[in-house]
Image (cartoon, rainbow, N blue to C red; front, side):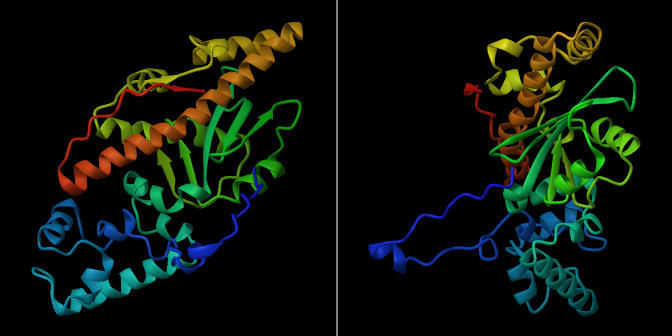
Length: 288
């Protein structure tokens, strides 16, 4: 998962084209004010309506309507601290100033350093059988009895600046914390179940995949979470490796499909909040 993509060489005019870094690109978080002390959605919208669209414009304004000079100076300092955190790729900084329900605003900045995570259990709370991790390029599967190890998991997770799950707030992360205390990194967590709900996509992961046109591999189509429990139990009682292989493939589909869901759901939610637009989620088939 830590293999780096090789950078293409530059030739001709390409060498004279200025390269845009993350520090220069305008992102959702740099257009957000919701993390500032006592700033809620209504006041954030007022800033945008007044033409203050990002941190740079806020800090550059001599005064902001409805904000006292003393409060303005305080917010300027908060913004400067947040900008420094982005420059240092310090995602942990935002866990202290950004509520979990708004962590999705960090997605476009930190998505290249994010891990999509999903677990399977034996049917008992806290008894993990499989942990799947996906960095957007490669998957890593940890299986109980093979390579499910606390220290390996801790070292793997500490590489990332963002953890992304579906229903992880209620299930995956509490179970991991109970099973492997202290392995979860102190970085923002995006629960796509709640992001999807805000744009009207409700139901389980499989239902939302269908609404988005995401098609699972034929070998695991129709398999549910309950089936995943049965596959593990059958593997343990019979030693049938095909059951274990199917379980691993099922879990891999779970984590891989989180990425296109995140891309679409976050984009639409931002469009609704920032611009008041309802962008219909495209029904484009994605076959893994």
